[in-house]
Image (cartoon, rainbow, N blue to C red; front, top):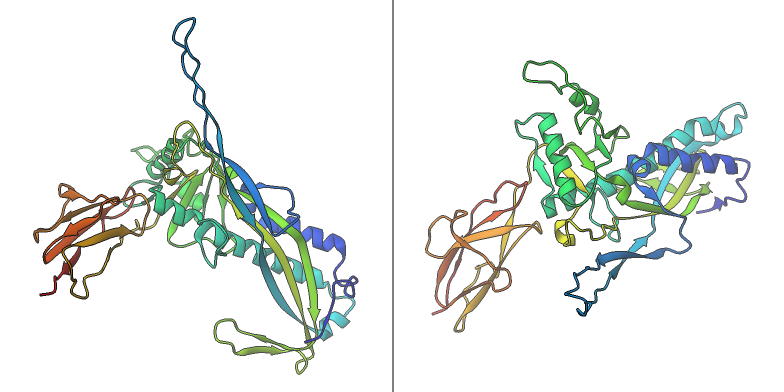
Length: 386
């Protein structure tokens, strides 16, 4: 496949257009609007030092008391620039038409595409690069910072989300939602239906995600968005392809044959990194239990339990150790080994020790996590070989 390089295409792609697109992507992407932008990266991977332990002060006992020492600890987190690419087919007849404002048509589509794919990845995990941290929705479910909207009012759910973020040691600075976010705010009223104002929820910056990336599984997200960061590896680069085919990524079918259809295709690429430093603070020292975001889901996540081994085959030996796990990090598991249905009053599972059996047993377990629906009862029979 031949192509015209960016140098060869300067007349088509002026520098000011490239800069406008970068600015436009930042305006189109809700995440880029609200996250903190770091200086452009000089390499693909960049290390960040994040405070992981705070120093502690002590009272000195008397005039000659021994002063205790403390330390502050830093951990490393990494920004890894990943590539986002867009290919836009353009008929050659359009390029030949000097009066046609090609960038007036192409630029908004580039901006929208780049902004939507970045938001989808960092907010909801859609096609998220493996090097990126957990998306906000997944992290919220995992750490107990999500809940289902249920039948509770929008105002009550919003204030609950604010409280969750504050409990993690952060001050919320914004709420984001879909196209109906403004309509949700119009439902804020007293018990007589009279509109009310001045609530903490209404004091937050309000941003609607209308680039097509907002997940229909989420009602809104409240958080300290400035605590998340992003950085560009480089500005947008281009190649103008004049030969070859463009395939549908889903099934490999040919969408365009550039040579046969007298077309060219503009490929635009940008490289961008995202990270959530989430440094330690005085209110919440554990990163596993700390998150600067809270997510209101349309339906609360249901905990899913697994057992290892899974009991599919008989076991041999004097004893068998069984490990139970959940699909969220912040969980409790209650279990029985006598055939009874487990409740939150049953034996609490200890991940450090697991469950050890010496004879055939049926283990039934129930998983519980903050903001989630309790799991279905997991029932596994572990048969000792005769």
